[in-house]
Length: 128
Image 1 (cartoon, helix red, strand yellow):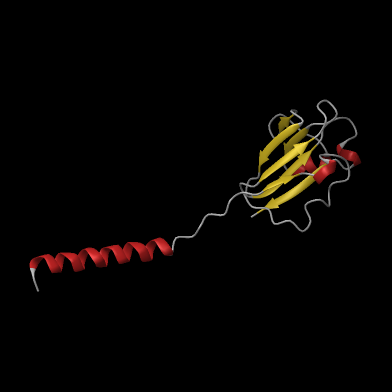
Image 2: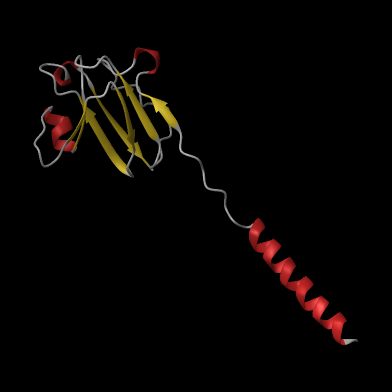
């Protein structure tokens, strides 16, 4: 075998290995965007809205509502259960078109305007 032919075989083998490795790379799933409440937007009695949806960390929730009529507050489980918030466990959104990325695990959102959370303006989403 000539000198050039051996080098070509080594190069060809290396290229095949790289192609095989490239074919085994998993394609990252793109994040899904969900409009909370669908056409109705962020409103009352949405606790059932997450049912049947497969949320993943990194998915985007869009909360649509009239500015000043509501807000969105990301709270811990105690804040969700008690419809309350404290500065150390909450982030408040007020734009009327809030975009919030889900974290892995339980994500809790409430409206803190008087009576809104207690009237069902809250959702819990578990993201894998």
